[in-house]
Length: 303
Image (cartoon, rainbow, N blue to C red; front, side, top):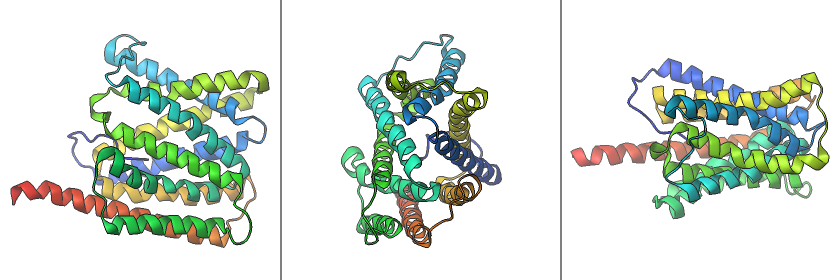
């Protein structure tokens, strides 16, 4: 996740805190539901049907904002197409990785996304990355190695897929930073969903399995969790400071452990928890440094 564009809204820390915590729960429910569905359905089918809800929401928002549900004109067609393309490996790799790993392991590896965002901000946004943040990035990746325990055995395809997904997500978020304030919400929603919907539909045809009533609901619910989570994140960042809210993202590890125990009878491996602690500490430090640097940059003109 990354901070959306901040608007001039009164700061309400408690409400922002609750909304951010709720958003993480929604995203955790998405992950758990998707993992549950991978036991009976190919990830492509899950992707295809779960994109229906975000697309319907995008059409609805477009109609409310412009009066035309199909008005998705963008000033940044190349970047939006690239982001639409990035969602395909991002979601497919993540869902496939979930099928092969416990939720706690997958979420721990997915915490590499903020590390990749820091790395990509240098060449794509021209941001200066000091030695402290570079050091934190290295420590974060060391934490991933601790969690994956490469000395115990070969690293499986699952973690590799999650890392690819995290990199695609990070690249998409860095690109979004460049134009988020200049692009309407319905465009961001639409282009984030359309690529995965079309490619997922094409790949679903030869492997289609007719869902029963319960699974239809679960497949659509994956999209619902994603929309609700995204909305809660946007509202939270409009009401509270990013430095206060960002650490709440890591409560996803708690939810993943609970869902592992409840739904899949999987107990967390101590090395995974240790690795997760290292990665989280590195990410929190990076967020702290970015907040401190941004605050100094704001105060500088007044000195």
